[in-house]
Image (cartoon, rainbow, N blue to C red; front, side, top):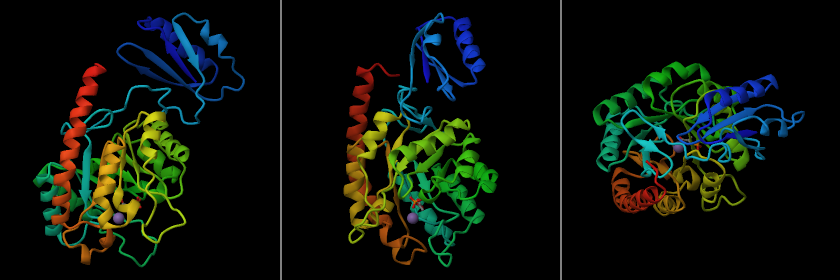
Length: 351
Ligand code: PEP
Ligand code: MN
């Protein structure tokens, strides 16, 4: 349930509403905007009559949220969430779409990672990705270089200034991730690992939450809700394809409709990973373009210094040359979208 206060209502009216809700065993989250204050009430509303709230001074309206996720919902939080990073990069809303690129796994050859990082930087992209702890289907496949990989990524950041993204698979590794990583990824396989969601929820670091292989959009948003209700509202969602019956031409099926749907029902940023969605190199460019045109706040793609000899996901990884070539064309599209976004921001008077 959300309680929308009258614009400019007094603090004492707001406090009265909060106390009233707390007396009825609701947990309260306050959202104070420039013009409006919204009080989110989280808890069981079955035995509660919302009319009793409507009569309190300063209350404009009481809305019962139909969707099971509250903090992630657009109804409760109409303004887009923009996730801010140290170096001024912003993700979400009408900000310029971002590109995250890098190898599936960070490998022993540090120079290879650095070659990719320089290309990512050169193309004006903002984030370098690389797996350190790999959730592999087979226990015999490459499992990642663990902390050594995080150290390599941090060194590549020192050289290039790129922000660093890597996937966490164990809550016990949180302190390590917090010291090296700018954006902590929760992979598709862990989208419903609730103890991991709670652990990243307690962190201040932004989280990149990937959609589970068989997760509905509602389950995806409820996973984001787990992170948010534990205190971390800096969540970026990532559509990465879902399993379907036809795997003859693609690894998964990219559900691009998830992008506008999520933008309608949630205020959180959403990006697209065409590499894992399609599993095919030649599909990265068309699907990246389609993702950006459908309104994604960014794309994430796998790039390797030597894809034929990569330890994981070589078949879907772009070479540095292919990445450079594709990104030249993507940047043109991003420039156009950025221009349109700036015009829209002006029209909507968004600062
Ligand atoms: C990845 O991004 O490296 C990865 C393992 O992706 P997903 O969790 O989407 O399979
Ligand atoms: Mn991969």
